[in-house]
Amino acid sequence: MAAEPVYKQGWSPDDIAWEKFDRAKAEPWLVDAIKSAALVEYNAPDYVGYLKRVFPDPSFHPVIEQWGREESQHGLVLGRWAEMADPSFKLEEAFARFRAGYRPAHFDSSDETSVRGSKRGEMIARCVIESGTSSYYTAIKEATAEPVLQEIAGRIAADEYRHYKLFYETLQTQGEADLSFWKKIVIAVGRAAESDDDEIAFSRYCATVAASDVTTRPYSRAACMRAVSAATLRVYRRRHIEKLTRMIAKAVGADPQSRMVRLAGAALWRMLRVRAGLLGATTGAA
Ligand SMILES: [Fe+2]
Ligand SMILES: [Fe+2]
Image (cartoon, protein in one colour):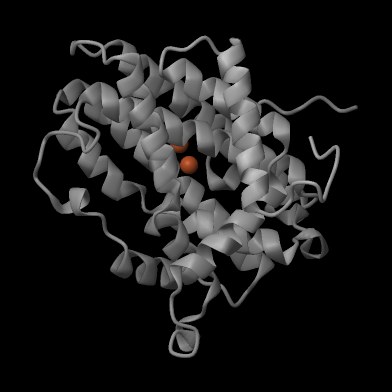
């Protein structure tokens, strides 16, 4: 078996072997999931402005800006791959519609307090997101047979894992008093539950419904979330969810190897499968 490539920080779109693209291996359900992910990633500059307000220490700003550039680049390469797989898709056009319709209040506020209540809370929420993206792109890399997407997902997954480490280390260096364990759990679960919010559903809509079809196919958050859930469950295997759970556990100060965390991982896996109506329908999917 060939050794897995090691993807270091600081790559550019020119490093990707685009010439290996094989459209026959770009499955339509996965193309739609990638289009949606591209829009969310491409929106990173708004998060940069927000994080710089919450963390006013100027020495941290270059780090946040670098993080934002990497996230935007994820959007760019995912969008470029989706345009190759489906030439009717145009990243910039879909992104303009997404941005016009999705803008959380805290992006436009001048408030210097995190919506999570504290800097530590903000970093826990960021760790949850980076745990999710790291596991998601790892799962995509393993779910697809398309060579360019394998490479892109591998590069992005490595970036996301580094982002997790960055925010985890930043969490440890905050001068604020530590939060109680249960407060940390509430923040982590709260942020994970927000994955159901309009960012995910509306990105799916803008990614998969052409501008010319919006009158005949109006936005339905519930329908978009059903499509997202189905695709997500098609990508993930049990091992990805277990790793995701261990990463979040570490961020809230729990022992990632503890029985409680193993049970939480099993419960999350079961919940995701129930949501997708898969329980009992398949065996050995791990
Ligand atoms: Fe990303
Ligand atoms: Fe990231």
